[in-house]
Amino acid sequence: MIDIFKAKWQIIVDAMFNHPIVFLLAILCILACVALAVLTLYMVGKFQVLQYPFLLFIGFLIANFYIEILLRIFKLFN
Image (cartoon, rainbow, N blue to C red; front, side, top):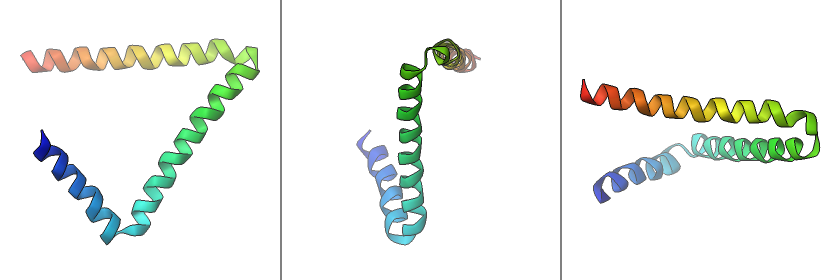
């Protein structure tokens, strides 16, 4: 487990030192996604009309997640 963590951490460190622009772009993309998630939650709280589509979207994401897990379990046993 530690070896996997060290290998993945080494990839991040290599990207940080060898490709700093790509590393910064990746960090900016992550921050933009967090900002969009916070904005979405703010807008859903502010406008009542957005609650039902948001709940449908979250329900779809959760169902998709569990279906993906189910398919991986089936694939594991086949």
